[in-house]
Image (cartoon, rainbow, N blue to C red; front, side, top):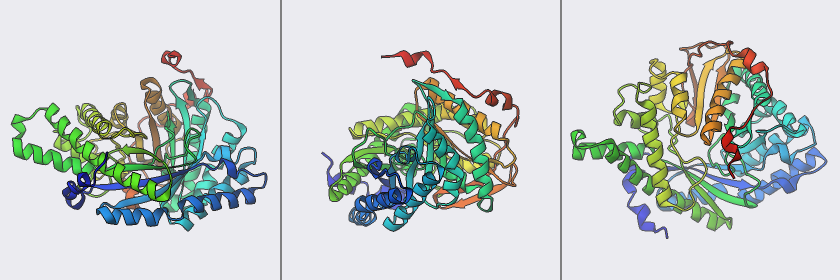
Length: 459
């Protein structure tokens, strides 16, 4: 049983350490909105979202005020658009995206996810139409996010889709060049994508989910930073081992998870919707003091990206998961430590200083969530190279049976060392160099499929 006093005891975390509920995400099944006529489908989608989400923002604000714990984002995740608009063609796909955007605006939510397709083993005609529609859909909407799952540990990697998505990213970036390629910040490519992620851009409402469900994403890098600083100041660094610091992270993560679940369950109760999961992912913000990179520095790294960085993030990720699992029976989504370069002030500074490279980031993603996230690269990076970066990250997820993803932005007209600014939670930072651009082109052009590893036969 979650008690109110467990939240009251975290007042300092809320007031001084950047603790918040990063997102309350309402998942909605849209499969019954299918229609042979695109405009009728769009109308059904808008009506259903307004029915379920009409009071979402107001409810979150009221409950946040009650506990003094801000719900920063209110979001919606819907059934994969490739399934909702199956058989209707590319124009209908874009019409669906625009309907989602309209519904998001009318309900006041920040973002809607689910312009998605699952193509890990192969793509249907509808899946291919959705992929081809991505640039127009992302460029003609403000609040719609897209995700494509191209790999799974039981099926392998769809390299044909990976190759095409590199080209799609280039088109979407060029179409939004006045905003430094921002359309690509709303597109993420996954391996082993969960059906209940509350964080964007990877949220969608899976077919195994209820008709509607509330999922919560709680984030507390600032809280973890403060807890570690206090422990080191009180006990002295010379008296502590990494196991002691891991225990501190675990206990702090436990308290943060309890806060998030309390808020999520009360939102669900008021809306008359089932509660799903709490995703305890340490998702940073551009704000100083709310950074994964700062945690790594406290744990002893004088340069993020130096030898030891992968071990350090592994310690952090494991402790976060253990704390969340102890706190709740309903932990799901991603639940780990994110390393989005543009959204994390310390990671951004390390990348600008040349301490943190794309290759080291890839190594760190082997042991944390959720992959190569919010990384700006030169605008002249070849499409095949973007696809090869995706393929490398998908292979990590495939072999390690873990969720991982890529959200990379080829910034038109900018080169390595230049700076981009997206604002808000999307942040800003340096354009990172890509080594050996173009050298992977022949590999990507083979296309086809990378087979599943032998562990796919486990039954």
